Length: 395
Image 1 (cartoon, rainbow, N blue to C red):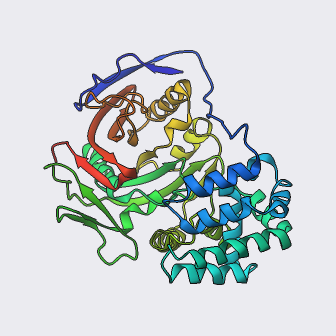
Image 2 (tube, rainbow, N blue to C red):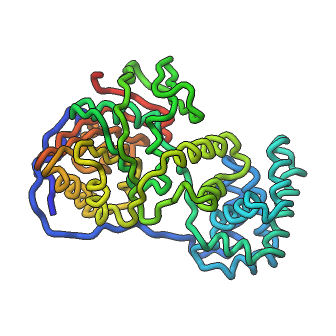
Image 3 (cartoon, rainbow, N blue to C red):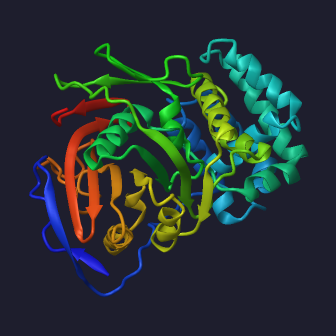
């Protein structure tokens, strides 16, 4: 495979790196789990610590389940990786959304129209959740066993829009084919059809779109207001991609969001509707294996733009280098662009402004592969998964 002979100098300046061959190696994903705790302790900790700040409803449900030996016995019948609170709570939410647990749906609705600190209302939700697990445990386990929990699937539009437009300008492309890597529903692919507002008064995209994203701008740098070129192709690369046109799969994505995160649910619903109107091509498999197929699906006269948003951390170093090699190989006939939004030092070949790893922010990088050269530039930093952005490149 190929390895960078010269990695970026650590500043935000562009670099040109030559690629040389190296032995093949496989990438891997980190695996882990909770050890040494009983199921009751896992659920109680989830309720008292993990979910408390983000979802009072899920917190109370988890605590209630931890206090019900009968419900816990039902959950113990699930495969070990499907017993975690996130899987069971998503399964319960799915049953409520699908009409199979109307009492739970009603309890959610009540909780969402009253103060979340109302202990009595939350107790009702917890009690109903326990009853659904006790009485309809087969449905709960079936729903939780079908699919993995998918968190945080929304698009990163405020960061991606200016980045895609800028990399297309650098190549001189009149149209692009977007390839979303590792985001199972491909909601990044709707970036050209959303409206975006920034805290400094700037705006991009379609102000009339049903999907409106926003971001706070850090520092004095202005986000470039260049319009995105025509998107001629949309492709998802994932080991288990989601068909957004499938009602049940779309419902599962919504079920993975806690029911009391009302604004986030509304945004996700709007994004799914936008994606369904122009569904992407789904390419199933490991990114290193199927990326060539995904790039080849983009018409020859269209610039392929591969997008990674916090996707490469799931690969080890060798896997990331193989990813880079796949991009290089695809660029023998035409340029291939890469928009990278990854933690500091995660994306090989991307400059980092000299920032330290684990700095609490991510680097927005642009790469253009042309034959055997990678022209890479860091253009900004972002925080909170794109909710805060510092654009640092000259526009």
